[in-house]
Length: 171
Image 1 (cartoon, rainbow, N blue to C red):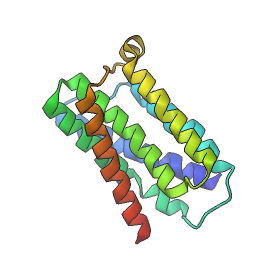
Image 2: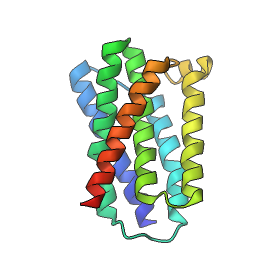
Image 3: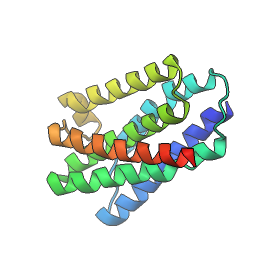
């Protein structure tokens, strides 16, 4: 339970950091309330429940809480690159994808050594892709379907932020 709570808090700190930084840069919020709820739905429910039922590893809750900055950084980089290559709405969608994917990646790196955790992360990511790429659903969440370059930006930012988390975990 403690590990699940640490994942939730670490991820939420990343969301807060991303929202504050892009709000300052953009002069307004980059993700709307529905998008933030979607982030929490996809990163908190299945992955956190899967973590709660597995045996405790050697990673401490403090290590998990420290992952907020990497999640923020990954999503901010994705947003900046998305903004340079597309509209504000596309940049926000790229950041949404990166924010969810970084949190899922961190969960896999730190806790994902079981099939249940990996399956839950995969289901969450597939649901995210479906929401983003399905026009009516995407519009409902204030997003827009991404082109290949948007997915590549999100994948690159996610990979970099997750790698940083992995490196920091090794120290």
